[in-house]
Length: 420
Image (cartoon, rainbow, N blue to C red):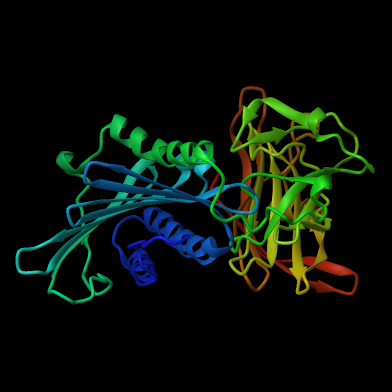
């Protein structure tokens, strides 16, 4: 079943162009660019996603609600379209992570109004939500455009210039209630669609593969939706009901196995539900975050290379970098901590007493298609009078490449960063 979604790919291209040229603080531009990139990646995988749709009518108003989930069971897009006496209004939601929507969300609203001369007036609003002034879930940029199209003329607005809304004006700012309502709306809609019935399309429904041996960790899917990182155990039979986390449910059951000695993390091919190999990290649950502990997976844009970081409050518990090969197969992974620790401490010539701290805290900035990894490494003081202070911080540029026995990692550049 298909519906006439108004938002066309050419509009997404317009977003990308604007994201790179819009004025304002560079950090805000980076957030807008990330959301624009996320939109394109999501659009490219909709055809191979789980798709829910519901059509309702009330008087002259027809409403079509849609939600898409990837093979990792993560919500990736929500759309609501209403028509009434020739008027059409579409709202689309894309987020970097709907489970943590305050980290970044893009909302498009497009209105089509018939005119007496047979033409159509189109009004569009693009809202970008992210971090600003130390707070998450803020409206960081809004763009608007309007155009009058003649009868029979294409209503594509790709060539219509955007107007940047001045968010410093109080009249253009959103209240806390309005912000909360718009950020919570997508998951509310998606949950209702799931409760209402089965999806109209589910490419994973009849694919078994190794699915009894793993459960996908939320928020770890690759940009193309093909791969993800999963939780598993090194045993022949797994009773997953024994590991259901009854306190948390994110779009279905979540699983937790922290106290198990045989926890494993796998790279899985979602299309075939096959395990491709072990990452070497042993994160213990399928939620992305457990208070300060989190599994943060950063993929290259081409979905070939990745870094899996098991982060904690004061230091990183584990960090691995790996890559896939055509087939698909898994080329293997390398321990990032082990690869950079000695050279990092030799470069800074300082280190906390291991009894006090003495462990690196990593933040992955970017993984490139060419295998370059940009990260920040620091040492945080976890106790005492200087608790919470940074002992040192550096930025490192690494390269993940193929070696005779699998992937290898080399440091290309290290530079000092100011301590926070």
